Each structure stands twice: as structure tokens, then as C-alpha cells.
Length: 407
Image (tube, rainbow, N blue to C red; front, top):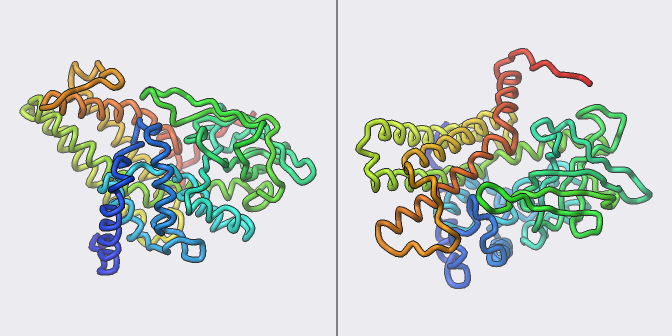
């Protein structure tokens, strides 16, 4: 693995940095930093406008091929874009599900009609998507999906419940993994459907999280309908398509997260300096270990993407998911340990913290409290740590598979 950038990639990074600096000003100056972890509700309108601005300016879907409206950026260039995006303190994306998950899936498995209908609205930021995978009894065990879809003339009728659906309350469409063959067991008999959210048969109930916000929702389908041709891949072959989407989920975007994690760690180190904890050798050791872990995370993520121009292979992706989720959760716990007793108290909504060192401490602590609370979910969503260890054990190390209970 060569971590040096080619002249072409360095030029791409410079162009991206200059564009972000020039455009995160004027009407979008107030969008900086909005919508990050634990604050997903912030600035929805201006972030939606920013999403459309990215699309109109050719800076949305940079990794998509030019034939699909993207820039055809290489993996290295996509890494550069994601890193520069976070370094510029640009707002959290509202179209991430469409751009990062569904779009690449349609490019790989969709029909020409699917691509013509859906790719351009995703790229332009005019239609938002959510992911209908997890259910109350089918989270990490995704093959246990029970939401059903029955063909009624030229439409599918969808009935069931999804949970932990990110951004569902704002989405126009949902890509849904549903059971279309009731006789099929587990992976067999599943189909990948595209379902409009704005209809009488769909109810969204936001879930209040530890952070006090509601990124996730429950979604109830009660006779919801979608056109028969809105199946990605073949009917009853949705498992293969769903796995492709999961692979795209663990790609270059993590490098942007690493930059964000680095800023959180900097805030934690500043907190430790401010309250004297850096004078304690135990905390110096823990902070040094966290810094080293973050460096390893970036290198390992780059290594896993080397030579990959499509979705990352699942074993390598599982290693990255297990590592970053565990590291980030541990950093949140360390932040509360460094803060000490003040970590048990949170400033009230809208509380004026004033100016000076005391205000800086309060602001940094509030940010790190959100990290701590939200990061409890890191080791669960997108495939729990236990599932990632099973994948690594069975597919990388060749260990015997975990016994399956058949009922």
C-alpha cells in the first residue's frame, strides 16, 4: 500500500478543497457543522438546499461513473473528497442513503428504467431515500426478514414493520427487503423493492434516542403499494442485491468519519489539558493509545480499499466495521472518564455558556457527551460486533460456522 498521492489525486484534492472553501460562504456559511452525530435534526432546510447545490455544481456522487452522472472519481479521489468535506466543516449530508447505498446498487443491479428514473433525482438532491432492512426480530440476523410483499396485479402490496430506519421521517422513498416467497427459508424468497413513502399505507414513528434526537424511526407498512417493476434484481433474489448494498455501506465514506473522529479526539485532548488530566500518566497513556488507534484505523481502511473499485469485500469490510465501532465507543467512554464528575450533568437546551475558558469547557463537554451517547449504537447498527466477529472467524480464519438453530 502506497499512501502517497499521485499528482492527479493531489490536484483533485486541491480542487475539492478550493470549491468547498468558496461555497461554504454566503448563504451556506451558517450550514457549517450542522447535522453531525447526535444533532441530525439541525438545519434540515439549509442542508437540503446544500444537497441540491452540490448536485447542480457536480460535487454530488463523485464516485459514480460519468455515464450515471457522476465524476468517475477513483477510490483515492473519493477518499480525498470525503476527507476534505469534513475538514471544511461542511454539513452532514441528507442524501447519503441515496448517493452511497441505493445509487451504486442501481448502477450495479438495476434496470435501465430504474437508472433513468432514480439516479438523477438522487444526484440532484431532489429525492431522499431511507433503508428498510432491520426489523424487530431481524436486525443483524437480516435473513430472518418477515415483512411480506404480495403481487396484486401490477403492484406489490407490502405489509410489515421495519425499525432503526435512519432519516425515514424525511425520506421520499425506501428500499425495502421483503419476503415475496412465503415458502422460501431465510435467504431464499427475499426481494429488493423500491417503495414510495408518501402514501396512506406507510406510517413513520421517530424513535427518541439517548441524545434526545430522533435519527432512527420505526416504519409500518400496512398494505403499502409499489409498482411491480420496482424490483431491483430478480424476484426472490433480493438477498444478493441486499449484500451488495451492505458492501457499498462500508466504503470510502469511513475516511471522512476518521477526520471527524480526529476532531473529536482533539477536543478530548483539549478537555484533558484544561482540567489537568494530562498530568496523570494513566490518562496520558490512554490518550496516546486512542491516538495510535485512530492512526491504525485510517491505515487499515486505506489498505482495505487498495485495488478495490467496487464494493469492499465483506470480510475486509467487517474488520473495518469492528475496529472503528469499538474504537469510537471506547473514545466516548474515555471522554467521560476524563471529564470526571461534570460528565454526569448536561447543559439544558439553549443554555448560554458565555465566553472564556469555562464556556469552552462546557461546549467541548457537551459535544463529547453526545459522542458518548450516540457511540453506544456504533457497535450495533450496520451489523453488530458479534456478527462481524462471526464473519471474520468463518470467512477469513476458516473456523467452523456458529451452530444454527432451526425451528
